[in-house]
Image 1: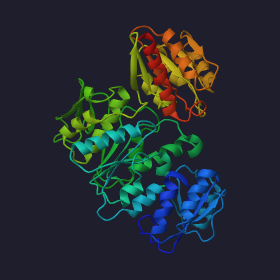
Image 2: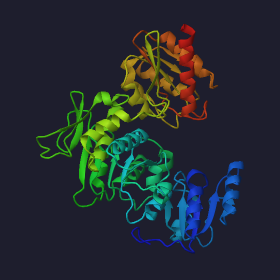
Image 3: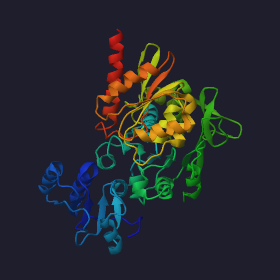
Image 4: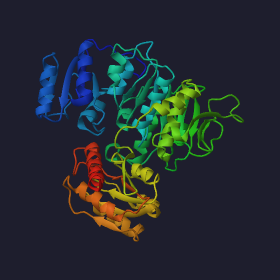
Length: 478
């Protein structure tokens, strides 16, 4: 079966790999289409048993505790995006010639003939913010849209629901792209590339290749990051993509844009890609002050969102209005409070070194609160590039020694407080220690560069703990 052929689900034996956020809806949809559905799941905990009971009541077969064995007669696998490609289930499927789709692929295949086109976004960092900005811009243009995919509304709901959309703003992870061979977006952007999820993909090259799938078959624009220095770059991925005739490469930069680029000139976001005579002309879109917050990496997100919106034909005014209307999610370079002339900023979402580096580049001088689960990361490059901005550092979490050692190598002049504790109350102590190090005019920045699960349920809980501790400082002064 090639990717262009329709798939008749009636009577077909389809295996859904994994319960959870994507597996349960996929199983229900496939069952409703007449497929004979078997769900396999590694775990058999209380939540899985409850989900299984709900599906079995519909007539779906569920097999708990064995996600590795291919059910006999399987003609298609629809997998949860997080299941690794080297899993025995997929090895067996490959030997048997059974195709494997993700939930994104399933949604793509189930779109109707008049389905809304997709404006798609991926990247190591900034995906969610960019997609939300894009949706805000599209709404400001009067278009019916939603932020979907790895965020907000599920793609299956967006494709099969009763609500009619003009265009969709779609966030896609590298996992989702790996399992979406026939996806063909109207236009797409890769925001940046940095080493992440390499345990899943196996190598940086494989990770980048899966990100680059988002450009395959693009019709109007492949949006890339002009300023990216990593190799392969996002521009390299555009060059390698097989796109439709007439599709253009459109860059975004924090500097002055060249032709076919969007960029920044004297505090103004400008477009030299979607204008007449782009060799000589530029269109003002918005002011840097319209971007919340106006940190460099967030301005880059806004430019990428603007490029995709402009590729769809959105007028310049809608870009400005959409950016002004956009409110970022919590824990993304969020200003919590000023206490004694020191700003306290929560970027708990900076769970890897690339995100933390972007956050650290937005402030100076900084008392940096960092640490958590390193997930195999190293910190030498992050510390060496940020050392001149640091007033001090407060380290928490299981892998804080890795950051402490990098600071000793590359920033020995920076005072470091090493909190030897991983309980949730450590955040209050970290904020109090940061206050001692900070001077008037400094920023105390929570940008952990690590995952949170050694101490907190998720990055949201970690950010909440930071904000609570900061507010305690302010109330104590009051």
